[in-house]
Amino acid sequence: MATQNEITYAQAVRDAMCEEMRRDPSVFLMGEDIGVYRGAFGVTQEMYKEFPDRVLETPISEAGFVGAAIGAAVEGMRPIVEIMFSDFISVCYDMLLNQAPKMHFMFGGKVQVPLVVRTASGCGTGAAAQHSQSLEAMLCHIPGLKVVAPSTPYDAKGLLKSAIRDNNPVMFLEQKTLYRTKGLVPEHDYAIPLGEADIKRIGQDCTIVTYGRMVGYCLQAANELLKEGISCEVVDLRTLLPMDKPTILESVKKTKRLLIVHEAVKTGGLGGEIAATVAESDAFYYLDAPIRRLAAEDMPVPFSAILEKGVLPDEEKIAAAVRELMG
Image (cartoon, rainbow, N blue to C red; front, side, top):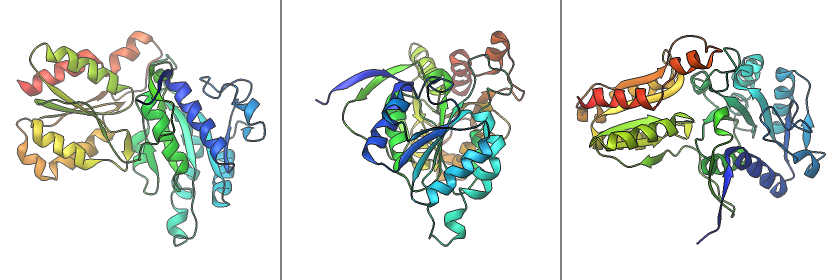
């Protein structure tokens, strides 16, 4: 049996980057305070010592250094960019909307942009409205990007390796409260293909489709519901774009009920796309109850911990939503 170690999500991300930088000299890392300071969440700890020429400190100018990374990618390098908070992608949205995703198409396939943009996403640290958003739906609206949101250390490492090796721009969303969570990760080299969902729990009565931090909440809710005789299947999307639609549809056909859970606000969220995918397929005719979405309230994220918790889904709200579907 292959050896596994229990490590944190942050270490899994760091290990993936270090292993890929050792394997491929074209891989380098750039971002704000990623050297001695270790990055805003300590992910890049000590990396500058091993790779002094490939861990590059940048000015506070996201548009500038993301643009520089795109240029480096076009010229054959494989940059990894760290953006402190996902909220700050708005500062470099032209690069992420108009440049990186479109160059391969506009140059007739003659240009590749093997770029990874890592960023800390979501709520849970009391960082208030400008540092706590979940903006994945905006990114999933851009053809040419790939969008990844791992929920476990195992998935984070395997998916990041695939993202670094991919020849397309990949947005890699790391939910900031997951950094300290732990899980078993193999010592040997492995990669998880982008675009494949993972069924984190097999069930018969209701499908819960989710991703990122909400996976843990959904599993906790499923454990409680099982005591009541309700068996939930938890589907972790892992990759949001391209989305593994066949896995969602097959699960819905089996359970005949669907709850979609995400941390982002409900209006315009990815849950609407998932619901439409089911509604436009033959899985719709298997449903025994209307599709239900559970998401954050449509409001800026409050600073207060009590108020922040109040606007987000949690295991109690998830369990209540499943009971309604079953009822």
